[in-house]
Image (tube, rainbow, N blue to C red; front, top):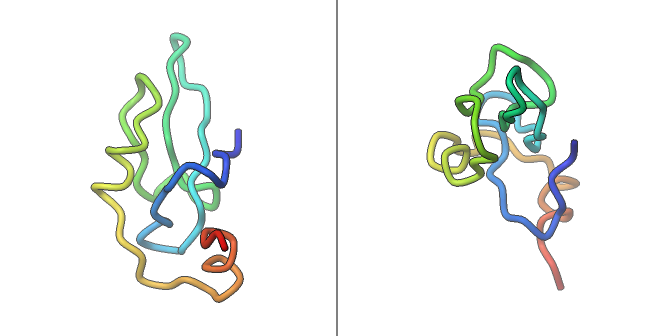
Length: 72
């Protein structure tokens, strides 16, 4: 499930992908990189955007991705 653009999320620190929310076992969720399950993801539980943002920094952001997060 895509996270709405109105919610601030840092991009994946490895590949620059915008995170997504996926269901995990037991009716809980993880916030994870959409490109690779080996990249950082939050522990299963409530949707924890804050944990994702604390553990990810942007190494690469294309100009297209920057324009998607900036509101005018």
